Length: 159
Image (cartoon, rainbow, N blue to C red; front, side, top):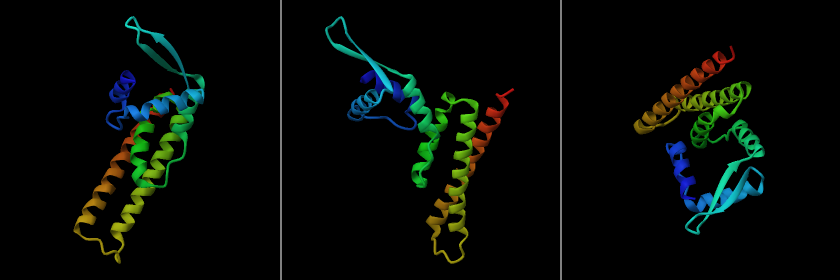
């Protein structure tokens, strides 16, 4: 478990670091669903070691999750979108194109929501709210620019 947690931290540490209490049940569920296979080996010291490997079904499930629709909750969007984009290399070119379109579309929608709140002449937002809304609009604009760069790279890899 320590090695798995360490590896997840190395790869996804900027986004999440799962606890040991979350890892074991997750690995068990994934194995029950056929997404992982495991093999148990006794170490020289007599300790049981379990090695996990993603199965073909697991890879298919990962692709399905990466292409799954986003939540309508803006708070969940950024973290989910970042992780999906981070894992986009497991998708083929057309799947990546679909993912990039979905991310960009949702980001544009949420940016528009923030802009509408900020520009509403009847809205009684105070100074702090305006600053945060302006920052949110900037974050969405930057994120959209990143996705557009990924789209260009993905289109360029088709040649």
